[in-house]
Length: 112
Length: 114
Image (cartoon, rainbow over all chains, first blue to last red; front, top):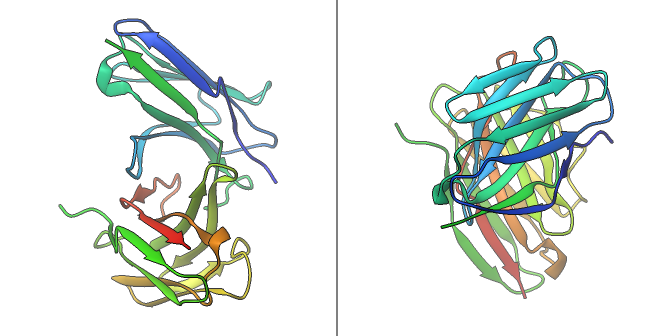
């Protein structure tokens, strides 16, 4: 089944640095979403990018989408300790389908 | 505004016992999703409902699992009998069923089956 795969699985950086996470998927999609999960909590939606968009910004977040390579990246600029969390990409299971398929996630640690 | 509410937050039970997990979606949302999260398998969709009707239960592992949504404000996920391999965090999420659809997750129920 289609599934987003995040890379790297874990990332540790210093506060203030930028963090980049990548996601690859297998089949055509309508949308790709990024979610954050703090330890012991539920997932929180961060940003959505449509298949006809190449780049999107929200605060310190920048998402890119390359449908030809079936990949997306999430950039967090000027990282903060509070950004420590796991980050997941999610794609529609089938193009246009309501249900989502989540990747395994990237565990991001921001060191003070 | 209250988010998605799940209960209990933690459940410890013995193998063979029945377990019932509960979820109250965000008021006005008409889609509800049940997920299971484990280290080995990640986040898996078990079942989802639109307007209280089950749409896709292909992720339900086996007959021991069942889910109901008797009304727009309540859903249950039942495991009977429970097994140690069911130990996981179970999440409920709801959405407005829009295109594109954004899901709002509850805090999860951590289930441990001994």
